[in-house]
Image (cartoon, rainbow, N blue to C red; front, side, top):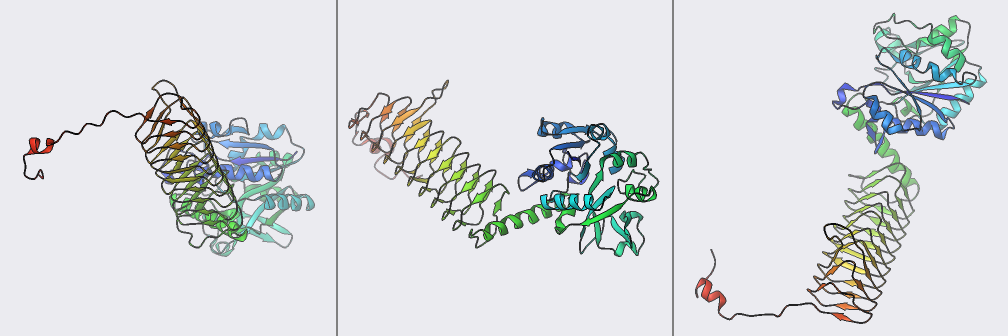
Length: 459
């Protein structure tokens, strides 16, 4: 079984936040998550994450998912990998991939193809490289007639070496036993006074071992972020890639302004995503929908032919043909049935709304089970909280809830029952019944004249 060691101990001082650099997010996920998921997708299940600055944050995020090792001093990449030696010795027979936790765009194909090359060439060490137009700041790959000669860091490179465009991605395959031996031979005799993992290449060659370089077809494998501007660039690259992926699959995006689609989102062909829309988590959107403008859909399931306008949907399900918004809020554990109309300034929370129901405007439906073809008038509320406990309302099929009705849970409203406008309903309403709750209307003639006189009351 092959190993993976992910270096995630960096502080990222230029980010100016008390967080390990690999925990900063790209498209809603920590950079570290991108690297781990790439390893898992490539079949690497035995993973050790090297922590350092604010290690508790990473350990809390990982839980039992990966092993960890702590680097108490940041003395270079080689020193970081040394912390994983006990982990490596537990499985020293196969190969180990070393990666950077703040370089999120390593991909499954690069991992698998570089491993195949590493094994085929019988290399002790294989560095994963990429060709880039602007190599400044990266370690340059030094090649010879027989393969790779070494990697030279930017600060240690000569002017001629700085003209090289093939650069080190920071990812290496090693034969695990050789990696353990090579780590013991690294020194810190360089401009930075650090233990470079890249020095293992020259050491391996001196020891008569084979070393090679695999050039990835994905130039983004080298991209990382040292500051907020760099993080923005990573997000821009990832965002553009996701938009392109969905457009290739038949999703319509006529203007990309403000559209953010996280990478686990799926969208059916024929759906149109309008500006300002943010799609998060494991959201699933069917075909031929119109989503946006200015929507936030988070871990929701949206059926075919749904329209959502300027609204939020969180951990809810909306069935085919429904219309939501503008300015609606569909909260967790809600299901909006087929062909339902949820209009402006409507909030639905932890409720089931039957097909064909209309909640057109200015209503709150919380903790309720609503039947089919129900009509809610403007300003209707299911009063679900008594100050101590949440209770549910049940509303039957074809009921009519008049404007400004308050349904005091757990009151049930029967099939085809009506409530009169302005009623506060505290008792069961049987099938086909009308509930009217109003005080006597009293009109006092001349009230205004007595209060303000017969002239104008304007101030």
